[in-house]
Image (cartoon, rainbow, N blue to C red; front, side, top):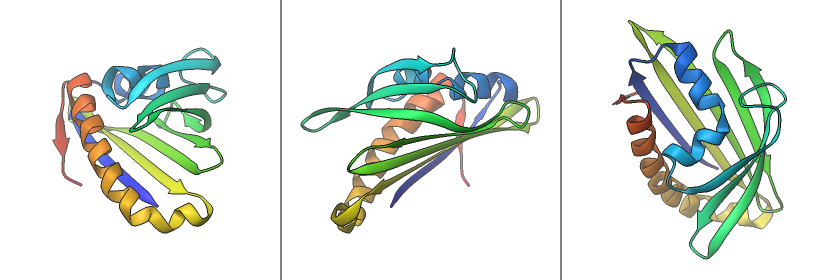
Amino acid sequence: MARYVVRVRTSMTPTEAFAYMADLRNFAEWDPGVVEVEQLQGDGAGAESSFDVVVKLPAGTLALRYDTVAFDAESTTMTAFAENLWLTSEDSITAEVDGDGSIVTYDAELRLKGLLGLSDPLLGVTFRQIGDRAAAGLIDALAGERVCA
C-alpha cells in the first residue's frame, strides 16, 4: 500500500474548501497528474457522485472510475473509491475549522492487487513524488500553506 497525506491551511471556510475539494471535477485544476475528469453521475459533489478520472502514466494514461462512498457535507468529510484489475484507490477529504479559515486534509491510499502488491515499496516512492506535485498544486488552488501533521 502507498499512502500520501497532505494538510493545507487556507483562509477558506471549511464549507467553501470542502465544496471545492469534494467536487472531483476540480482534480484537474490542482493535480498535474490528472489529464481530465468527467462526471458520470450527480452534479458536483454529493453522496451519489461518480467520476471518470484520467491520470498520466509513464506510458500513457489510465482512466479510473471514482465513486463517492461516504459524503457528509455537515461534517465536511468524504471518501471516493476507484478500482480496476490492478489497483484500488481511496481518497478521503476533510475540512476542519482553523481560526477564521480551515485545514483541509487530503489522504490518498493506493493498493496494488495480487502479485503486483509485491512492488508496493517501489510504488510508495513513486506515489510520494506524484503526491508532492499534487500537494503543491493543492496549496496553490487553496491559496494556503502546508501544515505538518
